Length: 389
Image 1 (cartoon, one colour):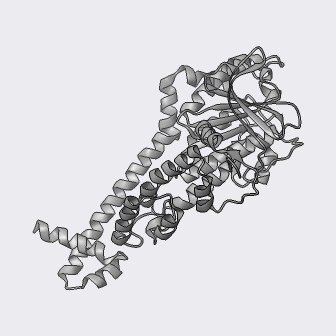
Image 2 (spheres, rainbow, N blue to C red; image 1 turned 120 degrees about the vertical axis):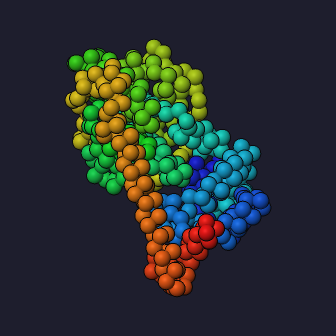
Image 3 (cartoon, rainbow, N blue to C red; image 1 turned 60 degrees about the horizontal axis):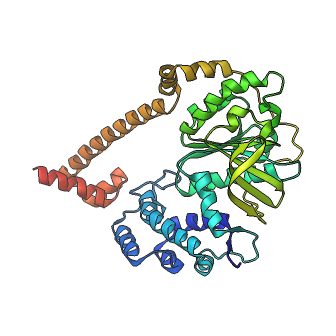
């Protein structure tokens, strides 16, 4: 590979290193000695099971499976991989990742640009254009999977939805959303970020289609609000002109033109049916890291049901806030706060009983067994009592 590198391999490399042990991190050549020293100190002080596993939430036996470990490694690895990408230091990345030099891939700088587009702070609305057979749906589901993997790499909860029943049936990670109301309900019910692939949008978003103009005029404010609700929208159409003018004019829209199966060109703007201000171009890529789909999909659906109710919500911010408090993340946060408070009360009760056992003459090892905690935990509770006494 002379100047090229597989951007999905970069994700996998970061994922692997975030939970790698000290030996693997040292061998990668991407982690400095100071960070290694911090990790060694953390490892020596770590009590198995004392912190949660970064992914499952269960007690983590090994320190490298905790979120704290990943927090130490993440900034260093991201910085060094980014530096290697910018400098074209392919040898270092290939050594660290064990990359297959026969892979067809994406150039270094474009890998950084693509990640910024898909996973940056500003949520985009990607609008695909191109003729039939150009691989629009293929690349849309590649981007969707890419976004999911980036979130998983960074420990961000993420869900993926689409209006294709066939794609949902073929992928366990995909769920079906077939209307604005269903999308809003899904947002309220699920934390984290959401990737939404809207396939065959030309059939539903054509402002010249029967009855679509009025629906689109109502839908645009909701579409704009999706960014604040941390939803990445991927719209698959035939031409930019097939999408309503108000949608095309949104500042968050990025157009992806697929002239053929090998090429994808990103643009910032569109005027009179012509795409302008090229951002980047990707060509010659293949990957199995995508959601499966059917090229001749007959089970794609989008209905405008519930749109009027959503419009009313958009016009009444107080009602919209109340919806989050009744069904969404605010409600979840309050429930979590109650559970945490209950857990703190239980910890206090446990500490009282640990002290009572100690007063009865039981050893710290025996008390640790009774309470199903480490001796270090028992010792810290009893030490606090001695200080207070």
